[in-house]
Length: 117
Image 1 (tube, rainbow, N blue to C red):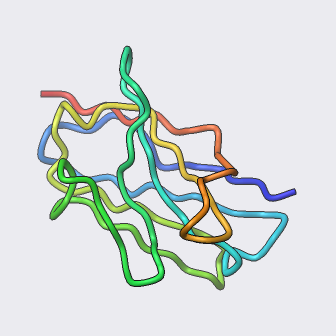
Image 2: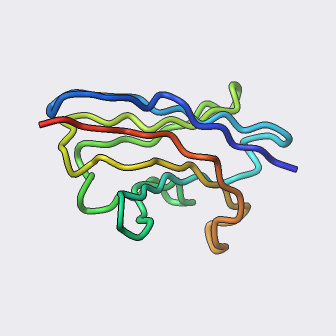
């Protein structure tokens, strides 16, 4: 059973940066395509970023500010978030899938990011 644990969230001022981490255990990270999602209060969960077979993809709202990366040796996926805005406030979740064609089936518990204005 694969397990995903996020960390790195917190309170930051607008314009600041945070780096989220997601440690994968139970199976090698190299077995998965990874993604990041977020859910703000009262809103649906939305896509943020993902690894795909041909590179990384990002939502329009974070493109140019956020970067997804991975270190297979550490079984860890990262989300570097720069130039943060109050509208980035949300619970951030990492997710895993075995194929880029499949839905994300494995999820972490989430980490809170709050951006103050």
